[in-house]
Image: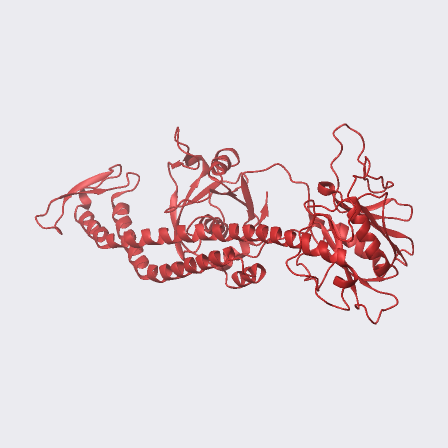
Length: 515
């Protein structure tokens, strides 16, 4: 819903006598499209408020101006360059006039006694989807724009250009019905204007009607958007928590085989003389089962006899360690999952304070802090690459695939043959490439640990304390014909057992730079 030209004219006529001559005491930036001017009347009216709060909004769905009741909570995060420029230019300036321009949906706020000691003006173009806020200089030249309009499709120069004179929107102002003392077309508020003698509901009833009607709709829309955004973050964490719990339960089920693995190792030890490199299995009598039936034991043909025996005993020890550690990890994983499910339910509750809910969730470690980019440092996006980039402790580049298709692209298009490829051994996850820069030989052990930690971090096992990671030169990684995205086979390499170090992950992930 938008204000039409006639309604804006009525509002300006109501507000101008109240605000003319007031001094700007504060400017509250409300990205992405709003600004709040805190104005101190001069002279002070004993029967009036100490300050007027004038809200200007270039919101495309509800562009508006009105006096705002109550204080405004300052938003977190840096303000953009437009807000900074306006705050610097209009600091402690005096509002000398408030007027409608050309009988259109445009309002001009003219200031004197500015920081530059020159006339400055704030122009609010409340023109629907193309609404904008513009800072004007002494001769109506454009000093700053809240929204840079796209260039016209016919090749003509844009209407609004920083440094050039302001040009009004094309066309004639739309016709509108008389207001007859109220804002026509707005539904009746659920409650009558509060009787506040020193406030604006009685002294500026039209403004109050605009705030009661449009601002309520905007708050409801903004809450729905904030709830959706928070819910998406919670759902991402929930997906990871469920995958982690499923992985831990699978590992716990595997520990029931620990004793059988040990017995297979004993059987292999007894028939060590029958083993040879190249065998993929051996059939022995199982003395540990009633009747000593024949038992087939799988072997790794690339390993020698002694290595195959040791592999079974190492597997047994690993399962025993997991049996001791997994109950505690499972309890923590279940508790985290329950907390996230409760957070999701609270996010869907219309009565919840979403800001407080998010703050508590971040403090409890359920959510990561929202990444708010500084608009002053934004750069034009470059070409997308299929990986994130991290830096090892000695300066080497470590690349982590983003999606299953990106994993394939990283491994087979963005990695050299001697680069090291890593992936979690017992769970899906991102492909990781430790770039060797053309060097041959073994990588730095600490950088290898960095890359292995990232492989676990970007997998469902990110909360685990221990994990296994495959490591192989990229040239030993192959893509089977017709295999689904992300699926590969190895013709060599090794497997390392990793005890996770949270401080290492904190060092690696914090300086992440998305590429």
